[in-house]
Image (cartoon, rainbow, N blue to C red; front, top):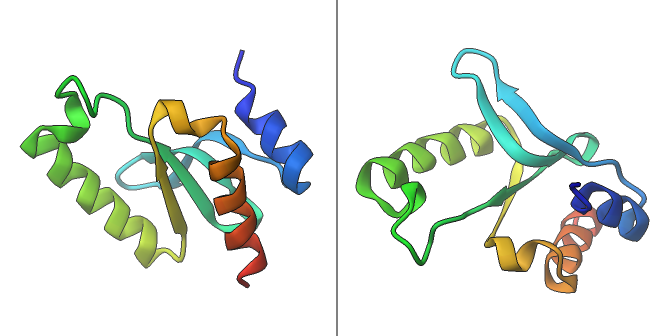
Length: 100
């Protein structure tokens, strides 16, 4: 069960959509999206095991995705799986909401 959306809703009052598709042509998805605030949260797994995100082709593909995300007006938070359910991440989200 995915507890992150409920944690964010309780701490910020905003709904979180898992696996939100933000680009129709490329079918790119955001791990978690606070759609009304255009905040994207990406969980970067495999950092310590040479996973897809750290290999050259995966890293370059992520750069393209993140640049298109920014072009579309989204603000991005990148976290490791360990950081996802922490107050550090919740506070980053709150800071972005309050920075408007």
